[in-house]
Length: 355
Image (cartoon, rainbow, N blue to C red):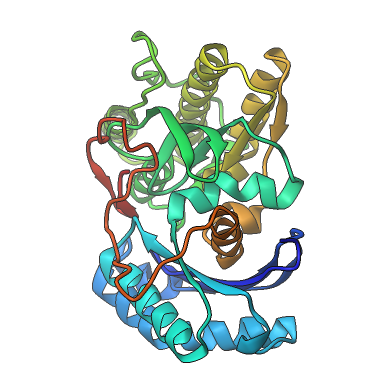
């Protein structure tokens, strides 16, 4: 089925995306319309604003994706759409758009789990074989997944509260840095002293691969308040050192938990996806963990690590090859765990429900 051509639609959070991908792993187009400016004044994603923006932009994103690919709807083999998990208003907007396109064109419809899109991206970018270990680390999710097939995922651990990207955003707000917080904190940390300020490494004293970042954020807040009280304000050097300490703590936790996951389930590849994968310190630490375990380290290009339509189109192709089809009863789901046997993770991040 290398001649398949799928349209992928993604609208689970604050990016409206559409892309066209082929069965032989060619990305013919990828359009992502960011909502960053719409939410900038609110310190986070506002679900109602996001849903309205998706409804206004989805048809334009689809049209641009088809134009860039030089194709019409009739040239496609099917339509894939994120059906969850995520902010329900945005997911509904995408599902309804895809249903309308499928009904009007007669094309097959395939609902895709947003997290499966991330987890299967290394097969799109590098054509790797199953099984492999995926660390999904972003603003709304953080979990280790052993990937044995397009619909065969085993969750080995995850965050019980804040996702790392969410923690970076919150620390940036505490330090009056711009959003998104990840790049801003990394830029400050580059010239900071990570050893000056002591911060905890949550859950490293417990077995397993589960993680927690809420307490780390609280510890950083207390350190900030102590520095302000001592110096009558937060000096630039203090802010840089605090950013460096926080970034190093997150990196240490992710590295150690990755080491445990690889020891528990030895596989030839450790892959990472999500916006936090762009952090150079965290990426270097994970590369070292993979090398120590004799595994290949793989991180897709940043444009395919963050939310995009190409990963949804590819996941749709993978499911379509397995014989999966959806009809007009396809429902939007705020929660949709990849590992249906695992207990639900606690908490809900600002960019969507934990799954």
